[in-house]
Length: 147
Image (cartoon, rainbow, N blue to C red; front, side, top):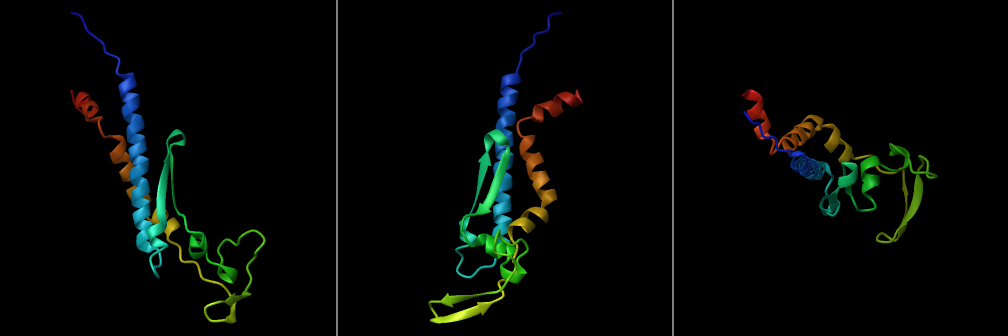
């Protein structure tokens, strides 16, 4: 009896690489959606400025908001800042409001986190998304294991 062996290593590696990319991309879309649901909305600019990027070679996904003030909404400012910026400290300040044509005193803005809760509150769902994407195309393996 002659047994033939076919090496499918290249195809399996290619499929796995594709599945990893798809898993990271799916997680990116999911976290974006969750963050959009949690972000405070005034005119919608902040909500509409989310994006994600998959770094293939590093096997990671970056999700974020590209508006400069997004970090101030997420982390807060002034005495309320959860993580003060370098050199600013946790302090109050005065600024000139051009629309009101007057100086305004403020203690800052309380944090309104949206991105970190979108990740931290959904860890189990994120793991399920990754698992679902990684096993795509490998159903044949489960069939062979049952034989």
